[in-house]
Image (cartoon, rainbow, N blue to C red; front, side, top):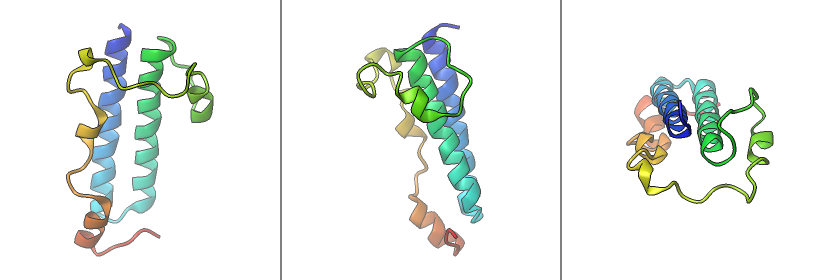
Length: 108
């Protein structure tokens, strides 16, 4: 797999985690919402890592150690060749506060 294919893998996995977080939010499972969102962020960082740092992502959950390896801070927007493979297209259509209103539950 080249770096763009690896990036696509990490992005797909992050999007899956966000869909899972939305399903958990609909049922008021707030601890799992937070966990799945953290997982999505980790996978996005790892995807960006393969594009901007190295083709092989270290086996770690330490996000700070991964971010520190970006030479000049976090990268600029993705190059055009990634087309519509953007993370924001995976976000739920309804903000979390609307999901809370629908379920009648609040975090905590």
